[in-house]
Length: 200
Image (cartoon, rainbow, N blue to C red; front, side, top):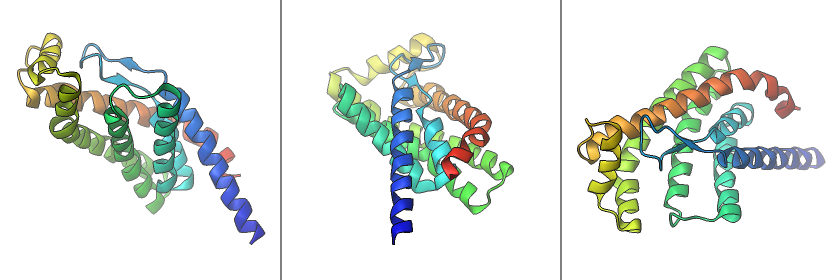
């Protein structure tokens, strides 16, 4: 019983530390102005969730994603009526869960890479669907900005963008593909260095 309690406490402690690290990384966001409107910002907090999920399982990745969002809301608040935070959580899980499940099935370097590539593709698909059907319409209602105005922001970057569908296809999906690949590369180089600490 005492051993189980110690393991549980260690697990909770690791989740807490990793969630705090992910939250800090979440504060350092930057846009890819050559690709998407400035309100799409890239951060590397999902790297921490990927590392945690590889070391401790898929549930750990989901908990890290959840608590980093919770910390962000507590510390910085929300100026999107929690729409942006919900989106961040769903898309973070879309990246982390496929990678973690595949890696848990076979813990090899090859499967880790395959898992992160699959997670990146799932992230791209989920981000496209979520933005088209939920996020952009909700932002439009929240800020009283016509969807055409949001599309126009994308058209200034890429003249091929002419409607909501092309905004998603030519800006949102590529943005998240770049995000997924960047997070995967960083995880690839960091995991072996930090995993011994997480397995202690």
